[in-house]
Image (cartoon, rainbow, N blue to C red):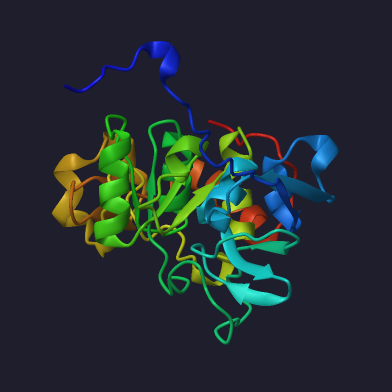
Length: 276
């Protein structure tokens, strides 16, 4: 007969103990990427500590910088992609988007700059959308676009997603995005034009600011029933949207709009809001 062991007779064998050693890597962010860092950490070398090596993409976003803002990463002087596993002692340099410089020999982290940039804007940037359309840029905007819809449009139509929502811009699927820093629409327009080097791509007054459709010159007779009485009397040159059929003419507001376009494209003027 087998003899039963009591609890006091059990023998415990200790399991092996594994010790994890904390690792460190240094990160340096350049130019406008510092906008995402606390003031005390800007233009400084930051120490990133970790127990288990993770991707450099996760490390960058843990420090507050969306991956859509990054165009080049150097690890110890060598170009790497987002999947690179950060190692103890690494020196990581992170650079913002290069729209003009040719860095094709290096590893790019996003698609090539769009030769004809197109945009989709989140629900808080309606005035900026109208301004971008005024400059002739294909810009989608609707107040009821949700995050998933914005992401889908950006991916399927290869549009740059412009937002002030950092969480949205950190979505791993997103390829093209820009976090607009300014809060006032005119400042936002100047920022986007300068940061994305859009000056030479602008075709002012070629799109409908209401619906984004293309504008074309049209004879007065074709649109006369749509015109107010004073407009019919004093104006001869008209443009019509090919989508919503809205009619435009060079009224008193056109001069103010021309001044805004000139200031933005030539980086002149102040940062105050234009007349409504």
